[in-house]
Length: 397
Image (cartoon, rainbow, N blue to C red; front, side, top):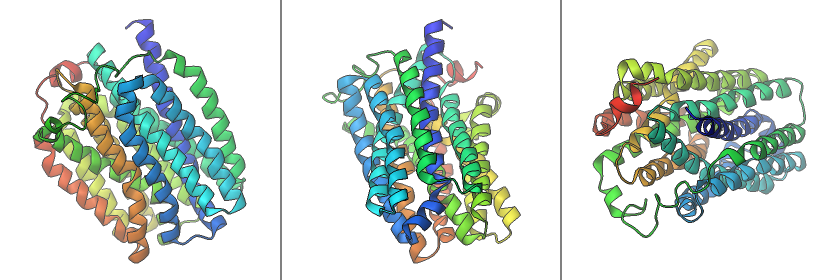
C-alpha cells in the first residue's frame, strides 16, 4: 500500500471519528440538558426535530454538492459544522434556551448529513482502488469516537461538570483534528461519478427501479434506525424508564458504543468466514432482539446485557450494506450516495419522531418500531446478493 493511500485512509478514519465523539458527547448529557431546559419527552422530541431538519437538508444536498465540488470541501465544511454546533448546544443548555439547543442540533445534523455521505463515497472509492475491505473499519472509527465521547461524558456527568464547558472542549479538539487531517483527502473524488444531469444520478429513475439497490437501502435504513435510536434515546430510556441514575445510564450507553466498536473492528474477520449475507441477517436479528429485550425487561442487569446485543447487531449493517451498494462496475458512487442517503435519513431523522410516540405511550414502547423494521430487513437481505466483487474484496484481510 502506498504512503498516500495509507495517509488517505488514516485521515478519513480520523474525520469519521470526530462526529462519533461529538454525537456521544451531547447524547450522554441529554438528561442534564433535558433537566436544564425543563423539557418533557415530547419537547425533547421537538428539540431533536432540529437535528432531523438539518440532517434532511445536509443529506439531500450532499449528492449535488459532491457532484459540483467533490467530496473534500463537503467533508471539510460538514465536519466543521459538526464541531462548531457543540458550542451552540452548550450555550443553549447554559442559558436554558430550547430554540438555541434546537438550532445547534440543526447545524449538527446539517454537517453530519452532508459530510458522512461524502465520506462513504470516499470509503467506497478506497475499497474499489485497493480491493480490500475498508468501510467497516471506517465506520468502526465512528463507533470508537462514540466510545471516547461516552467515556468522557461518564466522567463529566459523575462530577456534575458544566455541559457548556464539556462541549466547548469537544469542539476545540474536533477543530484541531479536522484541520490536521483534511489536507490528506485528495481533491476531485465524486466530481464525475455523481453527476446530477445524467441517468446515474441518485435522483434518476433507474436507481429507484433497481430491486437489489432498494433492498440494500431498506437494510441500511433499518439498522441505521436501530443505531440512531440508541444514540438519541438510550440514556433517557435507561434513566427515566429503567431507573438508572445519570452516571450509570451514561456507562451503559458507553457499553453500547463499545459493542458497536468491537462489532465493526471484528467484522472483516467474521465476514471472511461467514460471508456478508449471513452476517447481515444475524446483525438484523440481533438488533431486533436487543431492542425487544430493552423494551420489555424490567431487570436492570438484563436490560444492560440486552444493550450489548443491540449494539453488536446494529454495528455491521450500515457499512456492509454500503459496501454492497458499491458493488457495481458503473455508477458506484451514485449507488453509495443513494444508499447512504436512506441510511442517514433513518439515523438522524427517524429517532426524533420516536419521541412523539414515546410521549404518547412510552419510550420503551416506541422501541418496538425499530425492532419491527429490523425484522423486516432480515427477510429482505437475500435480494441484496452481490453480483460482482464479493470474492475480490472480502477474501482479502
